Length: 480
Ligand SMILES: C[S@@+](CC[C@H](N)C(=O)[O-])C[C@H]1O[C@@H](n2cnc3c(N)ncnc32)[C@H](O)[C@@H]1O
Image 1 (cartoon, rainbow, N blue to C red):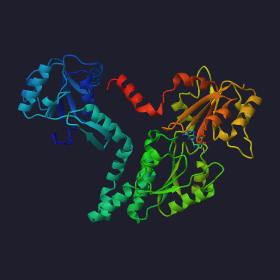
Image 2 (image 1 turned 90 degrees about the vertical axis):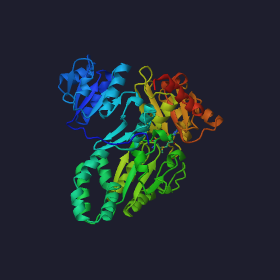
Image 3 (image 1 turned 180 degrees about the vertical axis):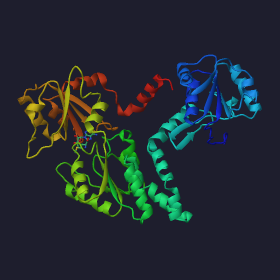
Image 4 (image 1 turned 135 degrees about the vertical axis):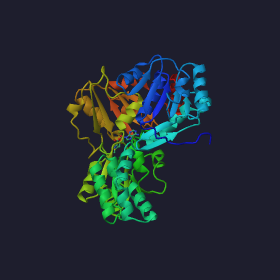
């Protein structure tokens, strides 16, 4: 361990910053956040620091650094020093003087001159997570921070605050340390936390009070109806990922990719209720009841659905049944296939020049036909996205042409969109069925009809086999 990690209380204490540029501004902002009294020595200030001086948030001494700023014990009672000047010589001097007086000193971007370094911070006050690479790579620390940020919901700070208000009650109710540990483990992994993360603080507070007053050990089951997106695991939301790692049981269907299933809690029970077209492996009513049953057994049930649960996903029916049975649930939206497939195919669904509206419809055949308002769909400046339309392409072609679109209206088939197996087939309304036959196109496939499809040639970017190279090249274009 090259550095000893500590968290320092600088509330109401003086901290000395030498330098008034943009780098200094960032350090000053952090010091102020921690409640420090900041004194800045610099002949000039950048706009941000000048504003802080103007509002009286900091004290500005308008001149160059002098040794007395550190050495004169009457003038200087700072608890730490930060050097952020552009002069190497001055920075070295500050470091030496501060070290000689055993004052903690940080010289920006020069770890060898520092007696303390400043970490990358994940701030969920009062929770703080500090990441350090020992000064070897601030960029790596920042990348790690991004990862940790994504796993720690913003509301963790609120959770810590809520819990701190109940600590003395819990000590009184559970005198033994093991009892208390068990209590907090159940609470922090359970419904109180979920309610708070949903933004319902009064309910979380009430649930916590009830758990203290009554028998808390009886955990109540609940259901998370979660959209898993169209296939690429990177398109999951933070919330989806968090709940995936909490659930005891995962009820999933055919459209949920293996890459996504790999992210659920390792010891969770997996229940497949997938349906093939025209082959309803598990009737919807049974799925609804199965969710209720697991929840009533006290389990945390993740109902994981492809795309978004409320877009051609029958999510509404599932939560209706939950509601009728008084099962607690929450719904997490996902990226629907239309959004995912169009982005990954380079086909914007709307575009100033080509399309001013976009409709999502189901092409699912019922009794050999598709019951849609074709007149409302067949418009030149509108994009139509057909879900489940593969079997109905002939009907789609016939009806759209009968209602005014031409045979050569551009159309795209996006097969297994956003995944490493994505294929995009471009054609027209007239030749879609021929393409499907020739290319052996299979479900899941999305059909996009409209003039925006012509943009694919120019805007396509996702090439599954070389995706990593593309991402790397674009990152090199930026300053990292
Ligand atoms: C029952 S719907 C479910 C839609 C889902 N709830 C959503 O929001 O994307 C299934 C249809 O969605 C479309 N679909 C879903 N994922 C897809 C993907 N990765 N690529 C292409 N189409 C997809 C296909 O048209 C498929 O037949």
